[in-house]
Structure formats: C-alpha cells, structure tokens
Amino acid sequence: MIDKTISIEQAITAVRDGHTVMVGGFGVPGTPFMLIDRLLAQGTRDLTLVKNEANEAGMGVSKLLEAGRVRTLIASHLGLNPTAVAMMNRREIKVELYPQGILAEKIRAGGAGLLGIATDIGIDTILREKRQLVKMGDREAILEPALRADIALIHAATADRAGNLLFAKSARNFCPLMAMAAERVIVETETIVPIGSLDPDTVHLPGAFVDHIVVLDDLSEEYGVLPQHVL
Amino acid sequence: MSYKEKIAARAAREVQPGQVINLGIGIPTMIPDYLPDASDVFIQSENGILGIGSRCRPGTEDRNLIDAGGSYVSLQPGASFFDSAVSFAIIRGGRVDISFLGTLEVSQDGDLANWIIPGKMAPGIGGGMELAQKARCVIVTTAHTTRDGRPKILEKCTLPLTAKGCVKTIITEMAVIDVTLQGLVLRELAQESSLSEVLSKTAAPLLGTDRPLPRF
Image (cartoon, rainbow over all chains, first blue to last red; front, side, top):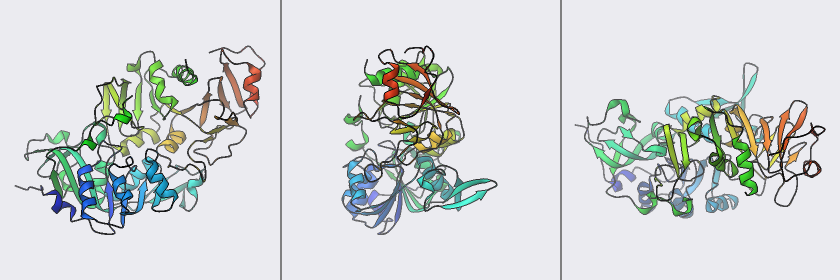
C-alpha cells in the first residue's frame, strides 16, 4: 500500500535556493515549526515565502527572515512581528502585502488551475495603483494573478499514509489552500494512522495533494500556548 | 468603567440576536463581555472560526484555538471551523451582519482610514479592507480623538482609505453618530459629555443637535 512517509531531512532536500515556498499557519496554529527549523538548518536561501503573516519575532518563518534566507515575503499583515516590519522598512526583504482573503483566493486560484481572480476589494483605495484593472460589465475590478509555489510546508493534526489530512480547529486556515497550490507538498503531522482508518466524509484535504509526510515524534515548545497571548 | 469599556458596552447594544458579527482588534474584542446572551450571536474570526464563545478562562487555553488577533478563545455550541477562503467568502459574500472596526480617521461620508500611515505604519491590511467593504454594516468603535487630542471624525480623511463610504455608525466614549446621506447625525450623547464638547472635538458638521438627545 502507498506510504508517503519520509524523514524530515529527506523531505526538506526538495527545497532549493530560489524556491517559492508556501507556509501554512495563522499565528501558531497550523505553522509547521519543525519543517521550518529543518529548512533553516539546511541553509537554503533566496527564498520567496508565502505566508499569512510572519509569525512573531524569533519564531517560525521569522527565523528564516532573521537569518537572511528570504528575499521576498508575500503576506497579508506583519502586525505581530516588529522585527519583520523593521526588515521591510530597511528594505532587507521585499514584501508584498495583500488583503487576507484576496491572498487566500490568489492561492486557491493557483491550486485550482486558474490564471487569476477579478475583485473589487480595494478598488477605491491605493491598492488599485500598479494593478491591472479590468472592466466586468459596468464595474471595474482588479485583476489578481493566481499564486503557485514550488513547495508547500503544511502542519496537520492527523494524516494517513496516503496523505489524507485532518487539521485541528483554527489550524486549518491557509493549509488546505496552499497544499493545493504547490508543485511539491510536504506535510508534518502530529498523528499518523493506517490507510482506511479515516472516515472519508471527514477528510479536510484529499491525499492527492500531498507528496511527503513527516511524522512528528514530539512537538517543540513553539507549538504550545504562548504566554504573551494569555489574557 | 474605562473609556474603552464604555464604547464596547454601548457597541454591544447594536447587536441583534442571531446576527453574525466580526470583531476587529482592540476595543471590538471587548464587546462580547457586554452581549446579553452570547449564544444567540455568532462571532466570526478571519482565521476560520464561526462561533467564538465567552472570554477564555486562564488555564483553558487551547494551542489550536486563537482568534485573528492571536488571543486564545473558547467556542460556543454550534461553532464551526473552515479554511481562510471559506472564511472570506463569509465576509465578502455578505454574511457578516456587523463588522466592528477601530479606526485612525473616519469621514462624514463614511470613508474609513484605519490601515496605513504612509512612511510610519504599514504592517499590511489583514482582513480589514474586505470587512469594511463587504460586511452588511460597519460600526466604528474608537476614541473620539487621537491620543494628542486631534479629532478623528473629519469632513474628509487625510490618510489612505480602507474603504469608501462604508461606515454606518460611529461609537465613541462621547457620542453615537450615524452616517447618513445628509451627513453625520448625532444619535446619542455620553452621560459624561456635553454637546459643546462633542462639537468641539468633531471636525465635521453634526446634524440633529437641536433636540434632546438620549444619554448612554
């Protein structure tokens, strides 16, 4: 039977200098911290990262930024990461920021084999500058090209060996969208189960989108509850 | 009660049972504390939750359960999870009844400017632009003036807009103001505030000031 499990070292060798890498997660939930750490250790550089936000200073993708491995960051906001904002302001990284749901749709379109989307979000704002505008009947829209990546790094709560995935609670966020939009999809999972043990009705992402599965033995501290966000 | 609590408490009274609401960062996140029966209202969060419950008690935090501002949250019965595309389909598709947002500036035409100060603050728009443009109703909850006392309610915004003509109501610690086709209409006055004080701290004409105003 098919088995997509692989060692973390072997999985991350697929990521090469200059690659575009989508990284799932919205804050801690869904961020594949172990895959990111391995990518950092591998020394890969000149990356274009696509992630909702830049995690927080010293955590997750921020480690890649701080180590100078990232040329371009495509995100929706960096509000919780002053280090990333400072790097953007010093022009140490190039940053492209999109409205969050538009970023999601650009990725979804890429995953769905479409060339782009047309939207009126931001049509009355400075967002229209430097964008391709199109007429849709009597309405004006911004044409946003679809986004695809060489690699997607995804965190799942549960996977079977065929790559069917379940995400936990708010950890789903961009994960299934990014997994659909990359040439090669590497998933780290907290739990691995045999093929046939997931109820097909409950699968969040079909295994066809998953290339490699890394089974996590235990979770680093980064996955835990962040004291700074406890009320 | 702090001025923020006063704004949140007043804003909560705008919510009708059964509505889907979204809470921006800051004051809006305090609104659930003042909803009479939270179970009738579904709080949506951009990161993929419909049905955020009451404030998360210390020790009950779940590492997989945060709101879009990064705070740990609880769930109410009937909650659901979904991905970011579905989350924004709820928003852009018009299924959010009220979006409560903070702001830097708001104009008499309901223009909202809350995401960028060119050259100073530009961390990205997040979900704010889609909420401002597509929620059925946008209510701004904000201090009446900036920290250094300058009016935030203006004839015209000076900062780049988040969305044009999107704001329906402005709730501050001093007043409740509706945006209408005729201009800004003063609906309520805070118990602690005088009409002259509100007029002096608002840099746009206010209508409806020649009648007895309800206090909050």
